[in-house]
Image 1 (cartoon, rainbow, N blue to C red):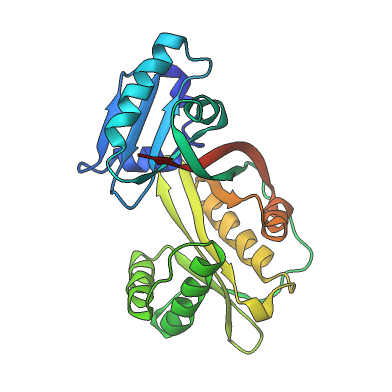
Image 2: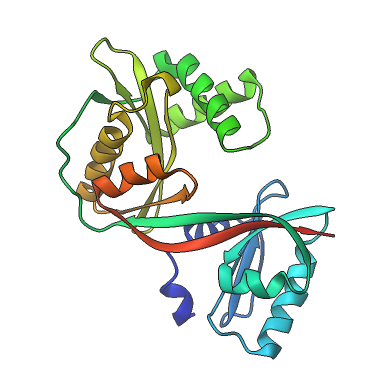
Length: 250
């Protein structure tokens, strides 16, 4: 699908879903590709731009196959969302920005020690993850579940922290890779330590490492958080697209 190739970065998570043999995938290998790995995660929908009426009706039919709960989550481009919202009852509209870094920018105020996360960070990172989920409006998670998540991050060895001058862990971020892309994720700074350039410093060093390894760093961001978005752009990330997260009511 030639049109899809141009959107591979934007639809990084859909690419990842397609690597899971247990995912539900639907495609005509030309105008649309959609997939979901688990019921608790959104169904991602890619379509070529400017669908004809016949092509859109086919997409609608496929979307209906994914609606098996009272409220089902989806992610797609705004052009498609605008059309789907005229067919289905939708709610929880949320704009998610997509950024890429093609050239790293040098930063002046580097603050903190860049380090790989280890098991001594488990308790702190678990609390960070719980706070992060609350800030993002997600369901509250237990400390036990948070610890399990942190264990997975550390075992995968793609997770990093920033420590202050006294060795205290103040910021975290990780990444996953697929083909030429490396997606930075789970970026969080201790609420008490914000405004000290920790996030910018961590993203700078992490992005630098990924570029040196030959990856194109990308990330998704909540457009409602200008402070963190500014930190990304200070390092060299640029806006490359917007996706819409939303719910279709059955």
